[in-house]
Amino acid sequence: GEDVEQSLFLSVREGDSSVINCTYTDSSSTYLYWYKQEPGAGLQLLTYIFSNMDMKQDQRLTVLLNKKDKHLSLRIADTQTGDSAIYFCAESNDRRSQGNLIFGKGTKLSVKP
Amino acid sequence: NAGVMQNPRHLVRRRGQEARLRCSPMKGHSHVYWYRQLPEEGLKFMVYLQKENIIDESGMPKERFSAEFPKEGPSILRIQQVVRGDSAAYFCASSDTGVEQYFGPGTRLTVT
Image (cartoon, rainbow over all chains, first blue to last red; front, side):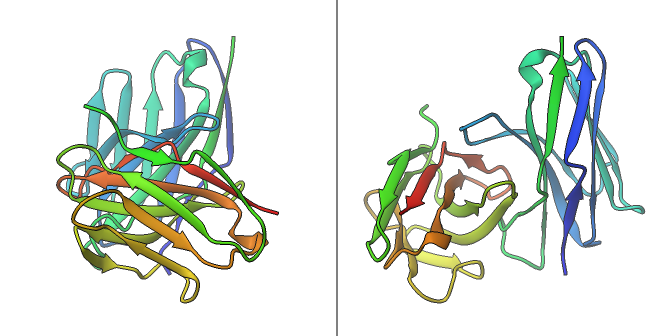
């Protein structure tokens, strides 16, 4: 079945770059998303990439997509303590209804001062 | 432009009671989605609605759960005869195009 996997934890020092990785199984994915969740809060859409792109940059965030390996990554440059949160990867595809996203279990990013 | 609003933020119900969760989408958004998040888990899709129509309910449990998005007013997720296993955070998201989904703060349901 369709699945999205992420490592559960990542710890970095303030000022370093963070790279959060995600793999997915469905080769028909259309959009891939990164969401951020702070404790007790909802999910904040950070960025997303269409499956025919291989990179997208938005300020400190860089998304890389390797469609052949079904691998997605989110790089956060100059990581700050405010970036500490859980980051979810999600995907959509044409075989499910629009908006029926499949989420990974999330990567908890801890930023040490 | 207010974001997606959900209420209540916290809801406590005894086993066997009914839970009603409300979601007001962002202004101009006609697509509403409900997801459930169990502790230490990612979000699981439940249902996708547009005004007065259920588009996809493939993630909804077959019994006790229902959802609606009436012509006027918020979308409602209704859980009848709640059980302990229904304890979770329930998130609503809305979209205007279906590509970008914006999430509300969630309703945390506790069944005692």
